[in-house]
Length: 281
Ligand SMILES: [Zn+2]
Image 1 (cartoon, rainbow, N blue to C red):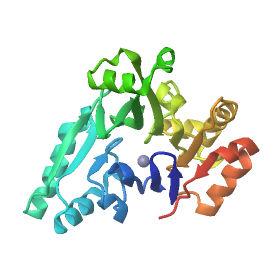
Image 2 (cartoon, protein in one colour):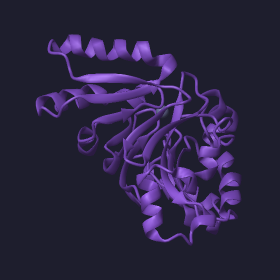
Image 3 (cartoon, rainbow, N blue to C red):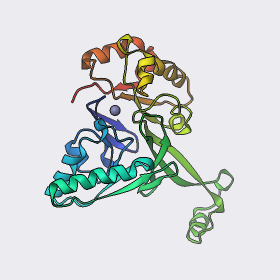
Image 4 (tube, rainbow, N blue to C red):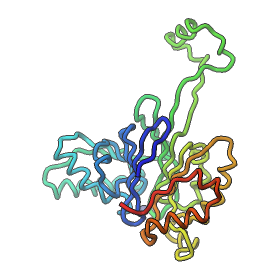
């Protein structure tokens, strides 16, 4: 499904927990996780992997093959630092199977990673908690803004100061436009200011009802809908409007059933804030 975001533009989400999850952000030439290969994902040259479980990396083989077939150039991957060498080994094995190496490079996504995507827009990692090394990714927009006390300065003076790199009249303004959690338990995600500040949060919500209860969700380091509800209720009372996209819903729910369970459990205000990615391809 597609969702239109302010500043970032259209994003495309495909997600069924355990089968495949892919989030494409075409305007930033970025895909977060590649469980499924989609045409939009193939057109992006950067892929940020939240963790190396099969439903988040299974699309990589076809992605690399199709990009090679059409001469689409080098692909750049980001993956959690602790998984780096195994992930490189995985891509090297794919090269070996193909006989003709694919064009790729892998960057370590550590807790201080700030990768420039385009002027002013950064890919920033934040910690998550899963059963293999993992991280979430945020899109942060930074820009220089005139400090309040200098707002009355003539524009010619401001332009001259900027040209002379006299930056003391400016301050950096930072907006977290989007945060994608990947798979995680709730602990460690909510603690993070990236999630609190994000204008849009793409949040894992794997299990929805008693068939898989909260303890069962915790066994797999996943989030249950019942844990999400109080957070949404708190966010509905926040100063700024927030958009929440629930994804990574388990295949045990039929798409319509999943939508119905979530709609019935959420308050009206929370429903207005939420978009659901149905578990269908
Ligand atoms: Zn998953």
